[in-house]
Image (cartoon, rainbow, N blue to C red; front, side, top):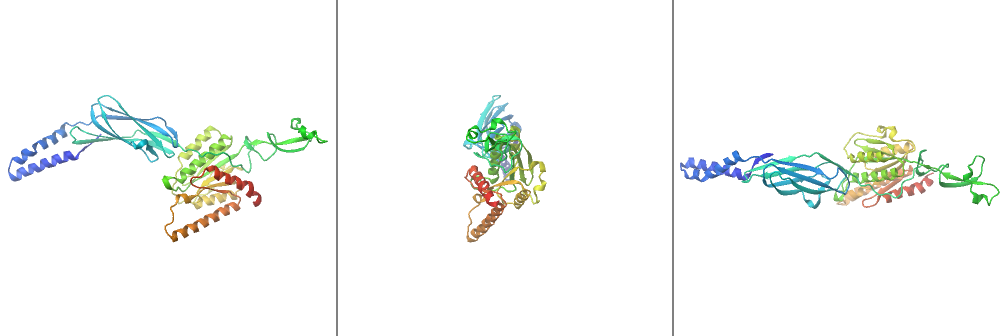
Length: 425
């Protein structure tokens, strides 16, 4: 532990030195005799006070929790000699908060008897954390020295983002040949009814629609839709991160949306990939199963907004991470020109694209004067022009505002793909 003199010791030594100087200057013994006890106390403290032998062990109840959940933090203190009073401060990183604002403790330690402290820590924000820098502080019994030590336990805590709940998925324009839960628009072997046609040589007898055939002079068979899988690529925009009221982060909302969309499609036995498009580009090739869910969470936990002046396009993304006929769902505030250019490039290459727009208005302060109001109006008109340009290209742009469920934005996408595509065609 680091030993530092307290103001009391400094005052004792300063008064003692002043008394000695006064005695020499006045050639009188009284000032020296008056400060002699102070000097002796200070000198004895310097020579006799030992450093307390205090050790601390920190443990976590779990190393992985969901955003919004609590984790139990336990601190075990031990000392070789008795410690009359020990202050223990638990320093948590931003995103982790001690319940009931209890982060500083005062305890008394007895020799060779461990003392346990418990702290309930709330995970307010997803991410990877190094938990609990512990600060120990005590004084000797006379208050002449303060001893301080910092304990770095090196514990890692991974807080998974809480996914948004979805009821329905976005249907892709094209499905894959592998089996899944999505009903294909093609006709073949399946269980979903598609149409009825006349019997042709080679048709399977079990497909004969006997109820209709009994009323017709010829046999009729049922046509079915096969159940195919979908390949979904989630494009997460990490170029910008806006902070709104109550420290709400636009990137945090985007991560929760990406997590919820990925989980929804993975539960349907679809193949899901992820591209974190920003200052640094990370990607996952589309795959299915529980292992892919864990991979997606690991990438999302490392998603951070990084300032970059380099111009980045979709050419930097490996082709395997953007397979043909994949449904690309972009989660973005549509603020960075590089993201907008990448979206236009993807649509130009023929990808089935849908955009979930994180409305930035909820993260912005209200204009203070008429000039600011006019500037915001002009900015909103430019954004409306961008949305109209994307929609003319057949790209649905759904606005997702603060306080709204993600399912409402996805319903807007589904409505556009259901009706607007016919008009565009």
